[in-house]
Image 1: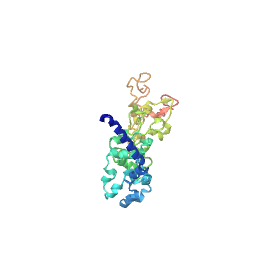
Image 2: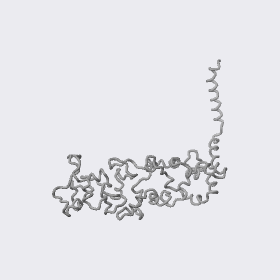
Image 3: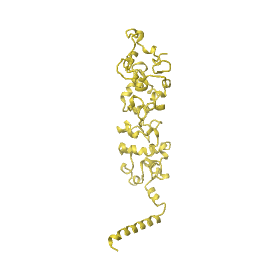
Image 4: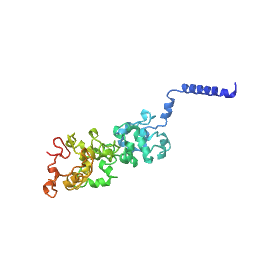
Length: 318
């Protein structure tokens, strides 16, 4: 037999010998080798007593999210990885998975090993926060949280105010949502982990505004009387959304309105401009009987009380 023809036979024999060697290896040998890289959470307590003191209360205490983490090694090494090398080298962040040394992408990947299963985090990689390198460790503190809710590093409003100082100022205006008072939180309206495309504002993605029931605006979670469905819809509410008239965080005007006088809010749209709609007349303007110089006609909602939608009159009268 020539040498070129013998080459396939040689490789076949080597494959058989390798298979026999693996078959003769004890079943637990591979798992034992993987287990040897772990030191166990008890070893961590020796140098990190401040973390271990309250960590038994933490939901991550029983976590073993790495694919090869033995059940009895869950806890610290479930997130930080095998710690045997870290113990042998007497510490050092280079020998352990230290989140303070990770890039934003690495920290996000580490948390999503477990939390990617949650529905409210389905869009986290597309969110404005992730694209700005604001990831889990930017808001959450696993070992020393100041807030019991979601292991936040601070009170939720203070966490958000760390970047959104303009919103902090809006919540101090006379007419506002009571976030600073603790009546509600930012996450009642926003999903910091990312949201689906909005069904209002022509589908433009809002600032992480969480959709409510049936993909409605978050406002409808509390203002259920504005939900509808109505026989006569107000396009400004259904298409443009609540923000066409209101400033959701705070305003110097009553009812969070963008303008101090009701008629100026209405006349932003009802000026006769445009040629769209079913009758090609654009947004209808007030009739000749409505003299804006007369104070009686300056408060539109005195008569048009069902301005968010009506089941009785197309002009939203009583």
